Image (cartoon, rainbow, N blue to C red; front, side):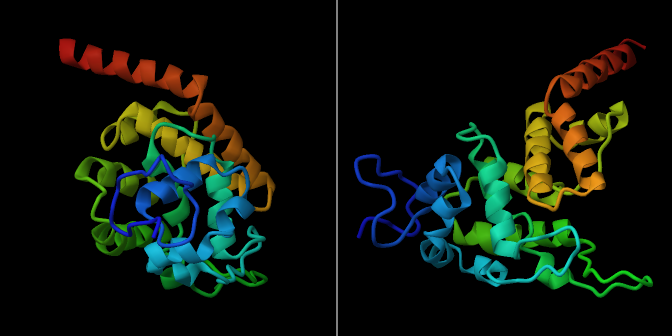
Length: 231
């Protein structure tokens, strides 16, 4: 057996994706290094054996005009849309888990001419599933990593703008680095949708916040806090 289900020790001296059970470190390496969704999806059975909760996403039709993939493939596209091999492993797990709460939140449209299903409250429900079911199963996720993972999942659909107030709000619950990682996740998520104008606008805003514009706002935030301390 090449994989130990609950071992977090990465076996660098073996081929990662062999037969047997996958462990969390091996899953993370796959998510970080895969060059396409196909590279990930061919290990679907191993991934679901490690995290059975994910099975509900496979074949789940989102029935929404902004989505062209089932829930599983959408999540894989979000993973693949992230930059490769970033330092925060939790960002890749968040990309995989971010919509796990959608099946619990599906509701029918209520407005005339709206044919799409909706998923109000799904980020919070996804966070709850990750917190209460997935993390306890993956006992090697420490408290610090778990906090970041839950932040990314819960706020992956948070509406932001290029205004300082949004940076202010997130600095109360996360570091600036984590906030910029969240923006990378939002870009990756948006790119896994049908690129409607509103989706493209989200990509543009979050890309700016993940880059220089976000840094400019953070500097304004620091100056604002310094003035408050001096008054």
